[in-house]
Length: 234
Picture: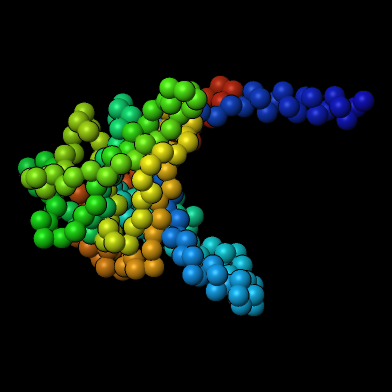
């Protein structure tokens, strides 16, 4: 009886300590699943142990990749995760994969917009979060988009929101179609996959030259009465 009462009290205390958070844009980059690698692994079972060890060491092919959203810059962590403070009200996000982006500067460190090199490849996708009419489930609908004729990417958060992944588009795979998501103020994007051809060193060296134009994304925790609040901050 005493144990039951203790557990009940503990549950009540935990329920009082709630946690809320500012809305964020959150996505993960995963290693691209090569079918021939999986077949080779099972054919040579001795390699299963080595793959397990690699996983335990946290080696993730999605780590160390830069991206930018709404003037922020971040790099995927060891789990391949990146998140930004959500600055948009729209449920449509434009995703661009390009190895370089050219800042069009207005003055000092203030930029007007980004421009893409017309001679370099880039991939464009439109991600829309919506509710399915029949199932009432919330889904992401991912479709390819055409390259802008002027190669311009706006930065104004009141316009269409853009997420740019700094990489060769041939090294990034984004599944087209519908995937299930939740009804939340946070935007948890569908999985994005990274191929072995990704050149992290080249991409990182490039981002060093323009990093001063961005704000880093950070998390702050503040304690209010009966709850913790997570803020995304500079």
